[in-house]
Image (cartoon, rainbow over all chains, first blue to last red; front, side, top):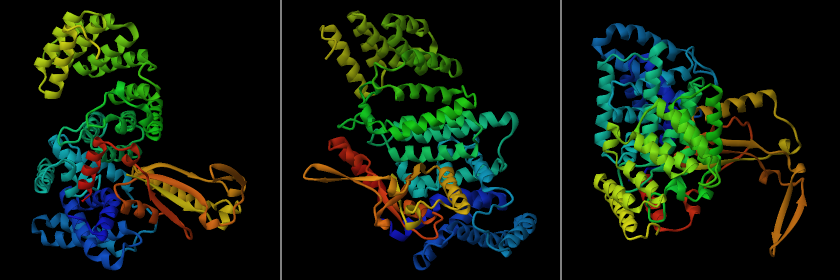
Length: 424
Length: 133
């Protein structure tokens, strides 16, 4: 289905206005589900009228006025909400009766704060992760249901249902429209950042579909992250996440080989790294560091920055990378972090030191089923000339991985070690 | 997708007339909107052509011509680089620039196409074209 020019124009305005529109309506209607319905009605009205009248000079104001008119009708018809109706209905009527807002004017409650409330609502932990993702892209990202469904390679009806259920769950849980305060802020912000990074990662290393990367999703996530950085500028982890995404996104072109297969960092053509995004990433990192950030996203961004600054894999500041992975391991202990730290250590102190590090953690429960551990061990053993042990490690990795491509790669490396042709 | 919004110069900016306080404030607010929306990637204003130069190539030989240049309408006064999901969105942002008079040209930045050919590129193109339908 090819969208008409008019529809595309309306969708473009929607993308720009949706978050503020829905946030403002949620404030007025007291219910994000109703707000989204009203906003959607306004969108449909725009689709009907704008092809004839042209896009209005202030489309946001048009949409809001239309949604409010609809809201008064809806609230009048809802007998169950009589009390609310009286209060809000008068509010809406009063708002409608007054002159349209001056250009640049703000309501009492700046839209910015309301958009932040909306983000926290859409990312509420009561919702499963995929519902948070869908709702955030819809309410804040201004994507249509069709666009989100396409991005996640699911049928539109499935996505639409996911959003309906999510709105119902929020209503059932009585989630208030607010920015969490005090002790609640930390974990709730972490939930928001997790949603944004989930969207980014689906674009950066896709789990579904044929393509290894889906750059559009990275762009959607970057956009959300940058919005958040403006809405919550005092939060270092927000800037850390933005920095991480900008720098990782800078490598998108270099990450995919001619055959569509992933290209490892060490093998990437760095002339294809996007310098504009790297510059933006480093600027965001600096913002986070000025705020004293040392959280997981800031640390990951700092590691990414080490790679971004390096002209080649050999010229990377591996000492700093190893230190940062050490700090990250304390903040979020995980096999992946330990492994990456070992690789960094091997670049600084040689394979033997890294091997000692790995052997020190190999006994831990989290490591037992982690095939990459054995792949890295094999690599280190091979570098030390211990080919027999290296082959055994590669074979163990092959046996443990579920990925066919990886299994054959590991078996090939094992075979080369056994036949005395380790490099090839 | 990325788009460049190219601001065409006019006689005023070519004459070196600086913007008024109101113009600066309005433009500042607009830039702020784009930053808050997460779409602003870069943006700069360019000094008048009286300070600039042109290099003209003919038969492989470059020739330098110093400014000023007279056809104000064809001169670039400034630019924004923005991230947008569609040409229509880039156009919508351009519509919102707080100009009384003026002209903005919108051009999409080359992305994968400048990478050179290859199977992987074809896969990307095909998928992206499908997503755009």
